[in-house]
Amino acid sequence: MQYALVNNERHLPQPQLRGLCPACGRECLPKCGSKIAWHWAHHGKFHCDPWWENETDWHRNWKSLFPEKLREIVHFDSSTGEKHVADIKTERGLVIELQHSPMPLEELQSRERFYGRMIWIVDAKGFAANFEIQKAPLPHPQADLLKDVVFFPNCASAFWRKSEQMVGSALAELHDSKLIADQVAENYRGHHFFTWKKPRSVWFDSTMPVFFDFGDETLLRLCQYGDSGQWCVQRIGKRALVVKNGGVYLS
Ligand SMILES: [Zn+2]
Picture: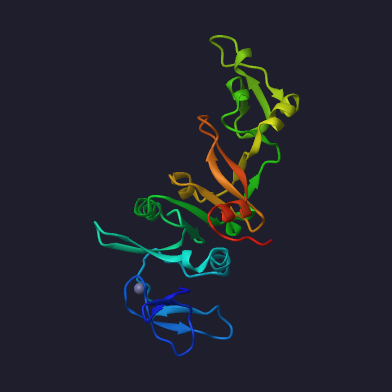
């Protein structure tokens, strides 16, 4: 943890200090070695929050984009007495959870239920080699164009038209998407199909916005492509997301 309570105030770790965990109130010790990122830890390897992940540089980098008062915010459900530490909570009450490791479905569901209004930022570097975004752009899922145009499953470079399909037949002529490139470009909002070998399928069950962070300036938001049942991603600028939520992004 970056913060513990010292004299009832949130405090960064310093050698010699003693602090209390803001979630459980137990004593925390400052870990201030020359080769580690300074942090607070409970005694032993214990952490009171079962959802807590060992913090990586990736977590720290994300948290550092937001003001200190928005980081590691204790969230308390007064009806159940349950307490957890949200990675980031914005002024508007949106929780931003940073997830590095794979996670069981039950935990995903509990966390979404507990926080209510939240988004996930997922460290995607661990599966980047298995994930490929298709180059061909898609029109956004609400585009009028899609009333007639249907893309070939998981392939934005070929399509057929509902208007050309003969009644009672499943057959329709396939066209090259270059034919509608101008209309696609006009309706492009960053959507692409993707292929993902050995996917971390838990993310398809999320009911909250999920953003994959592959370590560059663009996040990929996982979304369904209209009501086609297909999945796509939408490119979202990292800066835009951070700034919109009260952070500061210097690239
Ligand atoms: Zn604790």
